Amino acid sequence: MTRIFLLLVFCIATCVPAVATDVIGLSLPLDGRLSPVSKRIEFGARLAVKHLRSSGRDIRLSAVNDQCDDTKIERSAGRLERAGVDIVIGSVCFKVAAGLAKALNSQQGSATGVPVIAIGTRNRQLGRLRDIDELPLFSLSQDPAAEARAVVEKILPRFGDRPFAVLDDGSVYGRSLSDDLRLLGEQSGQQAIQFSNFRPLQTNQIALLRRLQKSGVEALFIAAAADDVVTIANDLKNLSYDWMIATGERGALLPYVASIDSDLSGVVMVREDDLANSSNRQIIGKPGDFELDNNLLIGYALVQIASQATKQDVGDLAGKSFNTIIGKLTFGSDGRATPGAYSVLEWQDGILEPVRTD
Image 1: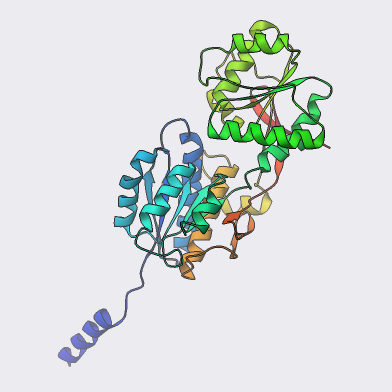
Image 2: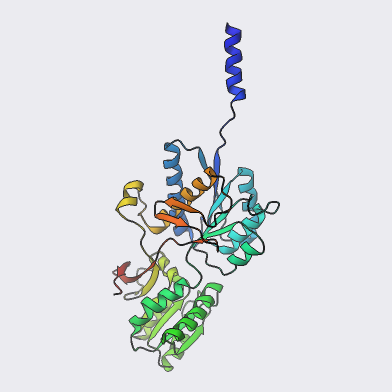
């Protein structure tokens, strides 16, 4: 009898197939200038995994610090590969996202490979990499011209009759946004009197501002990093120029780079709408010291998308819809799913506050 019992135990242990753990790769720059954003995304992702596991889902997160450095792609891809990831989420730098998609799918077709979902990367090369290189590359983001459209619709009218200039930092982001503003501004009858670029991360931009002042400029849109917005705002204060200043989504880092003596009063920016609401606040609960911001919710939503895709064994997300904490998200044929619309924020008393635009 004992022998029969032992045989039954052995058969149960060896004959019943084990349920494989779904492994989600998380690639983020967890140190450096983008770490404040990345750590909120990571927190949201880990919170989603915790909630899924508590509901019985066998799922695990494998994180790598990609540092937004395309020279470290092979290292990151190797770690993700060894972890046996089924899908990768989180890349905030397009070169890294594209490099990971290529490295993880070099021996596989797009239908059976490892999908990579980037965040906020609106690079126009996404379509080519998907169509020509057949990479399973996706993005949770607006389309490439969405930010410029929001600036034209919501920011430029605030300048009123003030002659304005568009400044960019010479980066791919800055040049692209500046070019889109030139085209869309002309189409809407809101034309800048000058388009200029500048060398980023300098101690001051006083010479540039004096040249613009001689041209009659009284307002600026700055397509650059938050650090440069702070520098220019401080320089304008020192020069006693009463100019309006606006910037794009990268202004979200202003609270993290502004010094105690920075004068950013009145600086406005466009940003995707606040995704927090009473419904997802109830799901999240109290996230400790982390505020319930878009980055945390995006991280949470990405894990939900990944968990649903792996459960359904979906490699090509195009045309597929997923239920998330921020609503139903559908990836179009271009590989993009759009998380929300745009709103305007203004720097008031040391923080960015939403403002009405109607």
